[in-house]
Image (tube, rainbow, N blue to C red):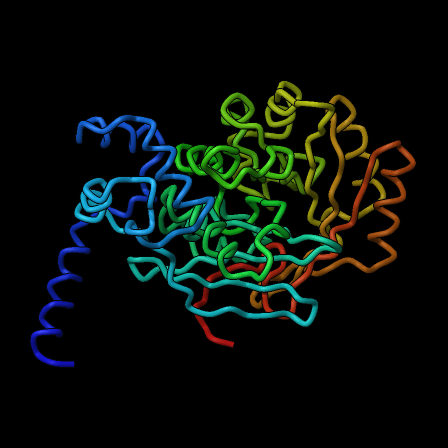
Length: 361
């Protein structure tokens, strides 16, 4: 490369650093910027459709905008993608994407193959502050919230990476972090993810937000989105749950379930109760009977998650007999009960195993 060419690219990179990633703007913010530019507000939906529906990386490709408009966008903004540190592929077909962010921190997203579609497990924070004793992400501590763009870009970039983007039909916020502790950016991301005009057009029933139990935010989530709710309960008594999940000291079981009871369920949906089964901790027949009684007032279905071991954790996975006994007791009480056979365990991509080590396989 000649000296003049090197100088050109260095200058261009310096200019781009000063520009804002346009994916950081939600629809209202983009309309506000266009208004400042004297541009009609309807142009916002055209721009957003190029970014999300058509997955363009260049303003020059936005051919239904004038050349002047495209130039102004290019002068003020960039269109950024996340940097893929590496992709690990499990023997069962699960793919774990390790993304490096602008500040060098890493997050993980997991693409899970189902019979005829994919489910994508999304992260909402770098690390997590909840301190759940069975979760490897908790060992990272809380580092920071993800921005709206960093959340949405997990969907955008993985859809762009797979051969058949339409096969990605389900999204679950069950990756790194507590989604409801990053509420503003979570909701802004879900609005783009579910928008049928300019976004990704995911049906609300295909998007699930899992919480460790931020009871005070449940009503907000039900009001502001059409997403499903999953609650990580993991115990049927406060003493056990407080040992496993420190958040229970602030929002004990009764308070959490009262918030669940008032969550606005749509179209016959039910709340998913997630229950990580830990050997000799919460997997006894008595635990199952207590759980069945506890959940009676809640329109719910139960997802049993046998513990996925990880280094340095003292908990153990129950025996298969104990898992099936627990399920049978709940079924006998007329609950819908599924056992989540976690995929991607061989690449540390299963529930509770995400830690964004950044180590290449």
